[in-house]
Length: 91
Image (cartoon, rainbow, N blue to C red; front, top):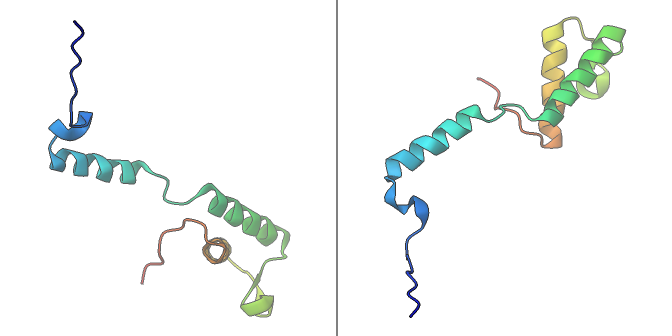
């Protein structure tokens, strides 16, 4: 005679919900803050900045980018517009 045991609950059901919440919170902390695509966008903008071709303002009519910080900000802004994962701007 064959006896099969059916368990109705999943494997993690025995664990408390607070444990699962803590685990998901830790996973979010370990996750990349900036996507690889946004990193490429910043790298591209830094390349333009180093060559003296990076422009600021709408349509590049504002003038030449003077600082590294400004070039990074422009790269992140372009990445946001393309829909890449970038943390929100601090206000």
